[in-house]
Length: 206
Length: 253
Image 1 (tube, chains in turn green, blue):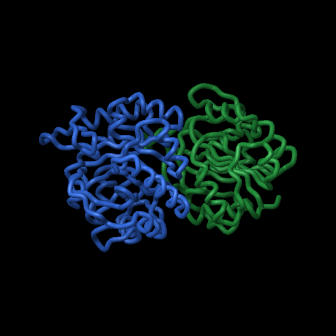
Image 2: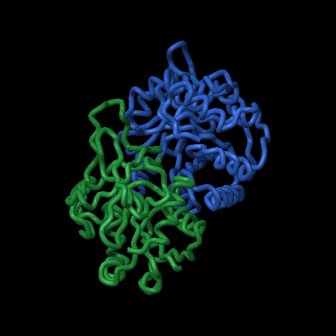
Image 3: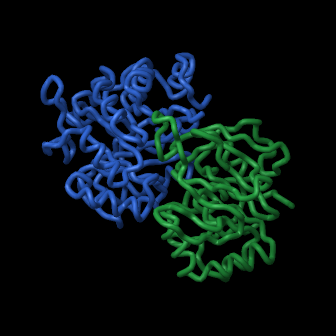
């Protein structure tokens, strides 16, 4: 099983690659279209500013390749953190920027009314999965995952939200649409429970 | 609920894990990769590496240790020490760091914080502040491993760093470092009250109760400890159990 970790010049790809390898994948970290075409599954990580990530994706010509491989050919896809947010139609992070538009919804800053709640939302928090989520198989009911973000995906279709987290209000922690699965938290930083989810992604058949 | 974090910190010098007292008196405490393996197995919430190697040759050793850690530990890793440019940050992230801690370079050029946050996101940029008590109620920020006074007040500086884009503040009481007398709770609390981002308490932790005090009295979002794990028979498992029994909301071991 070859998994392509999309390299478009943003963030820490090594830990994502290592987590996939730890659960048995052959990983190819690459920004080359041919590597994405060759892969069986595709992971889109992301760290940093939405604007820069989107600009880099466009500049490297990967938008079309991803569209072809994931949306047309239906390869299983995992988006992580900004890799979830990039799927939105629009982000309001420091301006207004168009996303890939694969999922209905917007990216907005977390709103915390309780002044004691700090932003960014950094650390381990409870995630509540909907019962039938294949990527949560074998994971206990309310697992704790690692988050590190200030913005979140406001899903335009509540049926796509398969997990939520509470930080000054509930927000979308994971979404699934057909062969697309994307999470706001960092499975690659969430120790055993994150590796389990990563393994579930490798075994996922839809 | 967001959990309160326990973060073992490792001071590195030329590839070895060391420990200082009040930033002086360096003692070798072992192999960092062995130590992080234990912290990882015991369910530490994050790790922080602070490198005090001066030479550029030694920097390669740091990248090597970060890479080895990232191979084995699927947990968040912050790395700091001598970070001066966007290139330094990129190199550390590429080696496997998740967050980068900036200290002296941030004081000398606060604009650097902004550039770093713009490029990598605030969630990736930690500003580390070393403070010394100069008068009964007065503190001052020091740079260059606490050798150079800056004239800055830590609370004011923390606020400014956050305005520039820092996503987390790591506050160290220099005079408590390695003393195991407990965090400077007044300092931690005043910084935590002043900023909207999470604050990590550092310097002085010597007992499990100190960890609880750092969160409950210091209002820190996370507590960091080094001597506690190097020089006593306490472990991450015992520490988290103690925090939990004390009523804190920690991630269960």
